[in-house]
Image 1 (cartoon, one colour):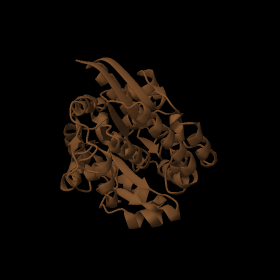
Image 2 (cartoon, rainbow, N blue to C red):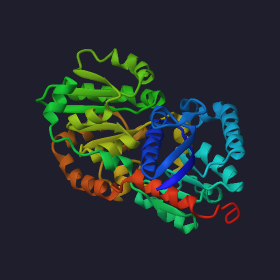
Image 3 (spheres, rainbow, N blue to C red):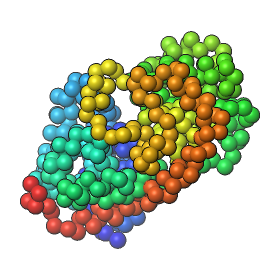
Length: 386
C-alpha cells in the first residue's frame, strides 16, 4: 500500500472518462489516500476528482473543428500547465486526446514531472513524425493493442501493452431472446443494428445511408426489425430528417444503448471505430463502413498508411470483416454485404473474434495502476530524452 498519491489526469471524451475512472478505482485499492486533479467527466468525478473545466470543451474531431477551437484549447492547456507546475503531482496521466495531452505532458516532463499516456495515438497508421515529440513527452506509453508497442520499441520509447478495457467487461450474450424482449424488439425474426457513429458529424455522414440500406433490406424481406441506438440528443437531431422518411420501417430508436442493440442483432452495420471492437467482443457478425466530408477524405486517404480501418481486421492482420470506405460505401454494396452475413457467412468471423477477445483481456485498469505506482518510484526523467 502507498500512503498517499497525487495524480494529475486529463481525459477528453466519454471513453477516456470511463477508462480514467477505472484506473482511479484501481489505484484506490493500493493507496491509503488518492488525490486526483485535472479534467474529467462524470465517471471520473464520481470516483473522486474535481474537474477544472467541463470535459466537453476538449471534445473535438476531424480537421476543421479543432482549428476553430484552437485559441480556447490553448488557453485551457496553458492554465492547466501553470496549475500543475505550481503544485506538481507525483505523476501525470494523459488519457487519449493526444493533440492536447502530449504537449501538456511535454511541458510537465521538462520540469521534472513523471508523465504517462494511456491510449496510444495511431502512429502505426499515420503521422509517424510525432514519435520524437512523444519521446520527449512521456516516461511510459500504455497501449491498448498488442501491435502498437513495436513502433515505440523501434524508437526507444518505453511502451507497455496493458490490454483493452472492453475485453475485460464484454462477453457474448447468452440470452438474446430476453435481451430483445427488454428492448421491445420481436424475439423471432432477423434484426439489424445500425451504428452510424457516436458524434453528430459522423451520424450526418452515415446515418441516412444506413437507414436507406435498412429500408431496402426490409422491403426485400431480408430483415424483420431494425435497431438504431443513438448516443445523445445531438445525434438524434442530426438524423431526424432521415428518420422522418422511413415510413413504416420497423425501426426501434434507442438512446445510448449501442452494446445491447448489437448483442440483440443478427448482423451489425457499423461505422469504423470502437464499435467494431465492441461488436467483435460481443460475437456479432458485422459490416463496416466509413464516410466523411470530401475534404477530410482527401487528407485522410493521403495520410493514413494502413491496409485496414476496422479494428478486428487490424488485430487479426487480415480481412475478417468486410469494410467499405467513402465512395465504395453505397446502398447496393452494403445491402449485398449484409445479406451475405445474414445468410450465415458471419459464422466464419466467430473464431477470429474469440481469439481477439482472449488476446486483449489483461485487466487493463490494474495494469495501468501498477505501472503508475512503479513510475512514481523511479527517478524523474526530465533530462534523459529532452
